[in-house]
Image (cartoon, rainbow, N blue to C red):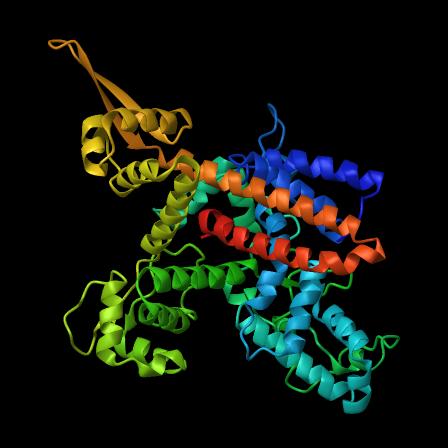
Length: 507
């Protein structure tokens, strides 16, 4: 972890703070903004210079003047927060990806974006003995194979365009509507910019389009052009990267970066499996894990509400690939799918199942919030809150008291406290004949979820500041041994807290 940044770094950090505050991504979480700014200060380096993404937008000119092109900047709040998750991302690499694959990911996480040849140079510098013993060709082929495997598994991707261009909203909307009647023309400016910068899915993970020549690998001082191979020139020309579309370096080499979406997707799957294992049983967790493994090649959206439909036999075969799943029978797999909320289809050759992931995430979020309410307000408030969260409609005070077995006087006191803290909606209904007033209560879910997320960001910021403080204290050699254990506890606590943050923000 870096120490205090130089003065110009502080100025740049303040600028990024303004950029983050001006985006929609973090406006609802003040402590999310503060955490992002702290991460910029703590990890200052190339990351700060790359955090502001620019895009050009076309604006209407004055009377008789042509449209103007204006460059705007925005901070990618999600990508900033991801920096404290780098150890977690590395731990998500499957066991069949060796140490060299991990080093490639580490390099991309450290530098943000690299070309294939820059990855090769970094690998060459760290493995001089291996290159000398095996020869450049074998080492390079192995590196290229590992790089290609990471791309095929969607762990790495081509970088988006440097400065995507956005047409005026009216013109862009007309073109999108012309292509699709259901096109969304109400996207925010930030969402439109990110969509315009994103590479096409067909080339997002295409490694072959980059130039990777053995001639360039022999000696860095020899910049010989790639040797022509008969029958290959046309293919290479057709795959030449479009420098106006893809992010490239000064040598016009395509740049690559870690695909955060894939890591977030796998962490989402892991969270769902963990929740199902705890709430249902281990067999249901094994079956859900098999569903994810079988559907991974189809599912690309991080927040997809349902898994792709899969045949029961496909799910069963995938479960058999794991040591834990080998004891399951076909009937047990079917029963677990029903426990996961899948409707039982007509049994036959086309017996397919799709799991409702949104329902699992919602249940996990509710469970997390309920535990917070229990700790903060007590068991009676927990019962009242759970009733209102399970049935999202208005309840009378008397009904709440009777259902939760809480005395009406105590229930009213608790309800007013939850309402004061903006956790509940309240409506007053007057009865003119009896001159009485009926109070109706309903969960203010959006406010609750936003408060919980902001409190989590606040707690994460406090943990990061405590870790920084302990780091400063550890400069004394006599204290280093004593503080190692404390660091591990703090870092582990931060990762557990971040799991909850991702549950509410990323999943």
